[in-house]
Amino acid sequence: MRLANRMERLGTETAFDVLCRAKALECTRTVIHLEIGEPDFATPKHIVAAAKQALDEGWTHYGPSAGLPELREAIAEYAGRLRGVKFFPEQVVVTPGAKPVMAFAIMALVDTGDEVIYPNPGFPIYESMIEYMGGRPVPVRLREERNFRLDAEELAQMVNSRTKLIVINSPANPTGGVLTREDLRLIADTALKHNVWILADEIYSEIVYDQPFESIAQFTDVHPRLIILDGFSKTFAMTGWRIGYGIMPKDMAEKMARIETNINSCTATFIQRACLAALQGPREPVERMVAEFRRRRDFIVDGLNRLPGFRCSKPQGAFYVFPNIEGTGMDCKVLADRLLEEEGVACLAGTCFGKFGDGFLRLSYANSIENIGAALERIASFLKRNR
Image (tube, rainbow, N blue to C red):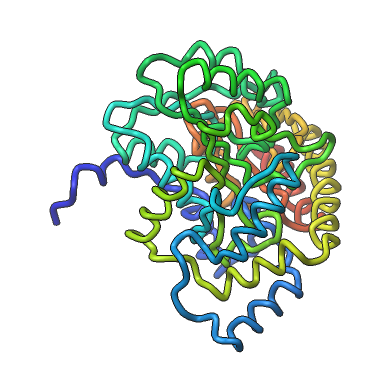
């Protein structure tokens, strides 16, 4: 079979590969899942009820490529309130999951050879999509000593005449790092100075712990060059529903909706109706989930820092820890594989998130305190046997 050359440039999201291996291993032993990045909470009941009602009412046909008008309006109001700015429905494009916003933005902006700056360690699909579309990925390193907060001054020095797009992610996967208002102002100034676009991945915007969420959208002067990526998967525990959205200048929204027409036609209409209930319904399920994530974060960070050879900073957002394991003397990929095969603890090597993830593991604490505690005990047992 002869495929297009671009297929050689297409990466993957290793979490799903490890999930498949872990599921296969469950045929013979128990596995504690700390590999996959999704809330372990059920989708709130009022959202599920709204989806059922929408199906009963016949919301099973095509809708507009950019999304149902009532949902675009609700997203503009909700997202604007969260960020302290005014958005308009015409700026919103609803997509099947949030990944299409990322892919469509790169597709619309990046020509062959254009440079895209992105965080590393970071979500692996950034680099995959940049390369697939013919761009040149330029990683900006996230450093442990900065608690994995992107260095905006270093980023500014990396921009040149070939730079077309800057990708930022706050709160960040896999590190939980969070950008400050000052960081975001400098990034916005850099983009404006060089006439560069920004793709702000804010999918974890409502999962923050010790400080309020800060969005680069608060700086309205950068709006003509800004695409915000957000969605329902993390905040409302709706990963399997596959629905996200982008907010961007109106003319870019029209272009992105055209790409949506060509690839997906539209996002499922009954799911869009359920998302109206998510945005307009009670906040208590979200608040309860974030409070529990905070409790688990403190528990797992404390436990990891007690393990020999581990060093773990405290994430400020999302639901991941990214411990340094260099003190164990083991390669991170080897350690992750052996923890799965020998201890039934599924986690990811830091290199799944880029070359600067070497020496780290990523563990999701979207699991119960009891299971996290059991995983820590299994890791401790492994380390004791392999001193």
